[in-house]
Image (cartoon, rainbow, N blue to C red; front, side):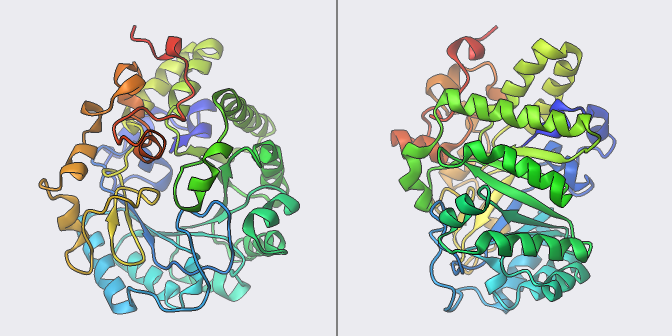
Length: 394
């Protein structure tokens, strides 16, 4: 996760993170990416059920009706373990988390244990009453996915009217004082919709947006040829940077982030070297705190069936099951070879990653993409768009 507004527009300084000791349990949410202990933010795909049929769904979600494999009692035990372990954030995802009748109860349980609870949703099921319930139990944030304007979004989601329902969900959250933001997955079909998303930030007074680079996972694996090429990715990231700066120039200080391509960090740094060298030095220090990709270290995933993964996109490697063994024991087990290597993966990456001067602040980028493209966990990430000249050692 790269904080574009934090880095490029200077809303965060190194001193801001240092003030809290960079401890994940003490840092406010907007500084969490700069923690030094890297207790994992845990994504729990609490259901595989969903009311939409998104073409890029990494979970390959299925029909809305059905049973879930982890019940409420088991889920509370899972949350108890995570809270005691010190995981700072519980991210309820799916499928669509709102199809579970116990979502509010489980979010309340997480917050009662001192965790921050957030949800990732398509937004279509957030009624005014549901927003009120989520606000009442202390939910910190609702991330609602949009893929562009109405026509593009509804085509991606496979259900006519899903865009209008998502906007209604945003409005319901805002009416109840519940922080809400947008999520957008970049690919060839929709990257030119990026300005539309910035327009929505202005028009709907939404405070936050995350732009996700495509990961070749789940139904997204079929879109591997629809990822942007390197030139297009550079254009897209520059567009995000320019649009963010426009917002700030207009006095609209939105939080803008990019996710799942840690080449974005060096790219921001290189642009600032040309435009504001003093800020570039500060950004380099913040990026060193961030450390780049944290799959298997600063982020983890629990699937709908209890399986533990390095992140929510990389499900072909499983480290254990929380129905058999607590997450905390699995996560710290030095005998799980791949998981142990991921905690210090800079030693193992190959190709361009191994030679890159920015490896310490990128962390080798996404292993899921490397494996999907090359068939090799430790190969270079094919989505890195930095040139050989840019990454050459000094």
